Amino acid sequence: MTSFNPALFATFAPPVMEARRWLADVTFPPERPLINVSQAAPVDPPPEGLRRAIAEAALDLPEAHLYGPVLGNGDLRDAVAGEFSRAYGADLTAGQVAITQGCNQAFCAATATLAGAGDDVILPTPWYFNHKMWLDMQGVNARPLPCQSDMLPDPQQAEALIGPRTRAIVLITPNNPSGAEYPAELLDRFYDLAVRHGIALIIDETYRDFDSRAGAPHHLLARPDWDRTVIQLYSFSKAYRLTGHRVGALLTSVERMAQVEKFLDTVAISTSQLGQIGALWGMRNLRDWLAGERQEILSRRTATVTALRGLDGWTLKSAGAYFAWVEHPFGESSADLAPRLVRDAGVLALPGTMFTPTDDPTGKRHFRLAFANVDRAGIEQLAERLAGFAV
Image (cartoon, rainbow, N blue to C red; front, side, top):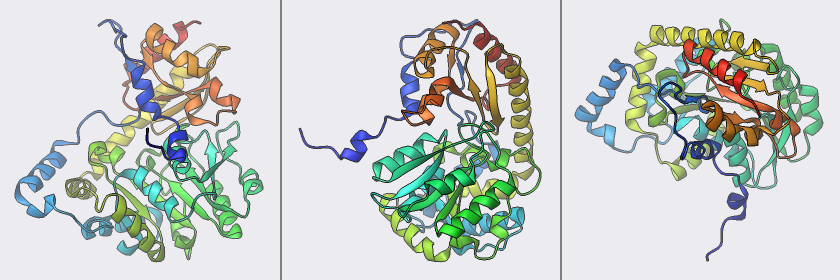
């Protein structure tokens, strides 16, 4: 047999795909259908107006089926620069924006410009597993930074991890998997830390549209020379239900953008034209609709907090945007409990072990619950099933 890339071979399998395999040969009766809290992707299609815009482009715009600019269509880059300038009190230009095939690709592009094999990138734990997977594939060392009991990372602890080969710190806010919203003051401290050590601060704001706070979640983009330190990531998938079209964004310096362009041209050439057309239409026409979506998600968050805080033995650590991070009351590892939850309770959830290093015992004690696709009645049923689950 031919050889394998050892870094890729050693990377763990995609967690969501592994979890779906637990559904094989399990039957869910009509009176107790599966409650799927394993993944945060929207399950409904985009609003009709956006779908019509994509359909009309597919029929009437020949260029919608061709390669586009590697860094993204100019009108969408302009719109992103304008929106982020307005939202963050900044003065961004289209030259500081790249459009990517989803936020995952934005992360890959960002880290590819920063780190090579043997370098270090600091990831707070619990981490987003795709971030860890990409670093592993590239031979980059993911240095775990355990979050505190409030699920926030500590800049002082991060500083202790910085060495001569540290290239970046990655923060996700609102967080995946914990849902925690990082205070602006905390981001300021991490920014100052990154500047002091000459490393990058990558901020993944995939879920920024569902942040519970009013106004800008931070003010880093308004700082002079922010783009020498900050690389900001964003996703259109959650905002406009465009997961299948794969559209994300990366904000950084014009100088770094030249390196981003090399990466994107090699792995994708250009992001889907139809997806970009849909994202632009959404930005121009769906502000009020998106505000309603945000309120619905926030109401589900409230329902989740209320339901989980009433469960004997279960401890809610944090909740926000699409996720809740909960500690279970059993002696077994969450990795062993998760398949049993499917069979015995009709609940598909990801164990905390998928978000932590293998030697970190906290993963065994926790689950991530992605509640965004579950209505309030379903959230109550979820709590009832968890309460009735026994080992």
